[in-house]
Image 1 (cartoon, rainbow, N blue to C red):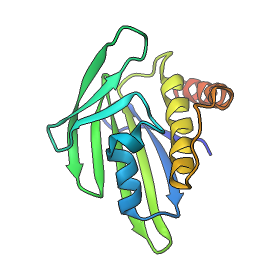
Image 2: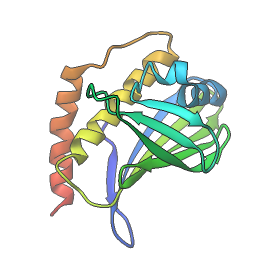
Image 3: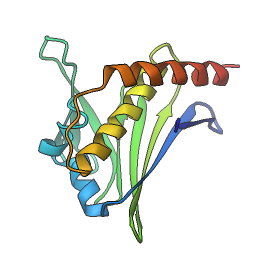
Length: 162
């Protein structure tokens, strides 16, 4: 299911992914914040200092060895992790449910660009990889799936630009 993309009051947009998971908040939190697990579903990210005001590094993975420091803007253990994402922000929220938890990912987008659909399809596929990891399966990044979702998010972003 596509993320829901909406205009925000005061400007910008928010893309929201809701993923019900049959795993505890603690297990999902570990996958979001522990580097050995994070590397298996979002290999560009590395947690350096897990606290509000701390740092997550983004590895460009372009052969240059370049890392970008992203500040952690909000942190509530087992509940909220929000950090800079270029000019934008990404926020993970976890809500306990009787059969697991609800993972909500929000990307707050200031301006829609040609890169927006790439980010949105990337998050979509990475959340699929996270789900697989939680089920005990490892997935390589599925380029074909990313391309399929990129086309769909490209259409959704164009509709928001109207």
